[in-house]
Every structure is written in structure tokens, then in C-alpha cells.
Image (tube, rainbow, N blue to C red; front, side, top):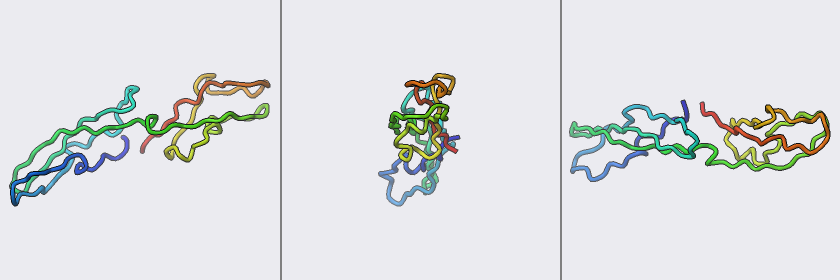
Length: 138
């Protein structure tokens, strides 16, 4: 799934038409994939095709790329140290200071320690890192 595709009219600019000829239709030939497999990359160019129809009866397909940028490239969570009491439940989002700057629907998980931070024994805990900050688009 992914976010809605941008308007096809945002992907191409039609210029230098003969006098009297206008664009009558400009749309995606097939709806582009907007949630590609990022394969660890911060940005991926997704190929797509825009179909353009002209008032003189001719049409043309134009190849374009839609640049999809990963959420991790756009947003940087800022963290802080926290002090907890013994047996407190420790949630990774408690350590993020700029939660309101992250996309709505961002989820938080611990990396390492099987997703659990030991608060039964006293002492300083590193607890792994906060990982898998993700936003899934509907």
C-alpha cells in the first residue's frame, strides 16, 4: 500500500505544444507503488509512466521516477536519559523528547534484551537501543 501517489500533473510539465493543441488528459498509466522495498536505502526512485492525451487525438506515454524517501531519513528522534524506580515499566517512547515532531502513528520498540529492560535489579542499564521507529502508512 503506501501513501497516495502524487498527482501525475506534478510529475511532468507539458510545454511547446503546437498552436491550438491542449492536454485533454494527464494521468498515471498504472498507479505507482508508493511503499517500495527500501532495501536499507534512504531514498529509492520508483519508475512510473504518465499517459498524456492531446486535443488533436494523439497521446504519449512519458517515463518518470517518483523519489520515495524513508521516514528514517526525514526524521531524527532525539533522546534523553531517564531515571526509573525499581520494578517500573520502561517504555522506549519515554526516552524520546521530540515525539510530537515525528509522524503520527510512529511506533517504538527496544532493540536487544528481548525487548525488555531489567528494572528488577538496581543499577544503570543501557537496555539496548530504541529501534524500529516506524510509521506505516494506511
